[in-house]
Length: 208
Image (cartoon, rainbow, N blue to C red; front, side, top):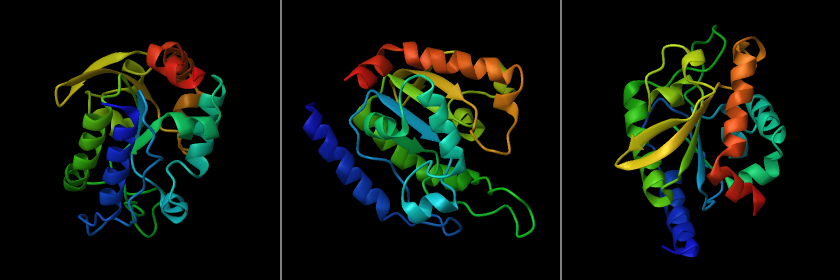
C-alpha cells in the first residue's frame, strides 16, 4: 500500500477516534499524535489533564522527560512527533485517583478493553516493525511484567493480531518515579535507548 493511502487511512481512523465516548468515567476528548506513516510506534499509558487541554500526547512534565531521553540519542521533540506514530493504551484522561490522593487513576480493565480497538486498528494499518512501550501499564498489555529490571534494556519479539514485531520497553517518565534515576534503572534505561537508536527501523525514520 502506498504511503499516501496509509496516511489517509490514519486520518480517517483519527477522525473516528475523536468521536469516541465509550467510557463514561474517562475525560475526553480522545488524544492522538500526528497521522505519521512510520515504521516506529510509541505506545503510552493514558493522557493527563494537560494533554486533553492542548490535544497532544506527552505534552507536560512526563513528556519533557521522555523527550529528553530521545534528545540524548539525537532526536528532539519536534522531529520525534513528525517521525514516530504516537499511540496509547487509553486515549482519554482517567481522572485523579481520589480527591485527596496524588496521581492519576489507573484505567480499569473494561476501559482498556474498550479502547483497544483503536490501537489494534493502528497496528493493522501501520504494521510497525518497532514498538516502543512506555510505562508498566502499556508494557503489561503485551508481555508479563514482574519487575521492570527484568524487561527493560532488552529487545522483545511480540505478536499482535498475527503481526510480529520488536518491542523495546521504557519506564514511565513520571516525575514521581525514581526508577530511571537509580540503579539498575539508570543503566537499563540507557541500554534501552541505545537499542532503539541501533534498531534498523529507527535509523530509517530519523535519517530521512
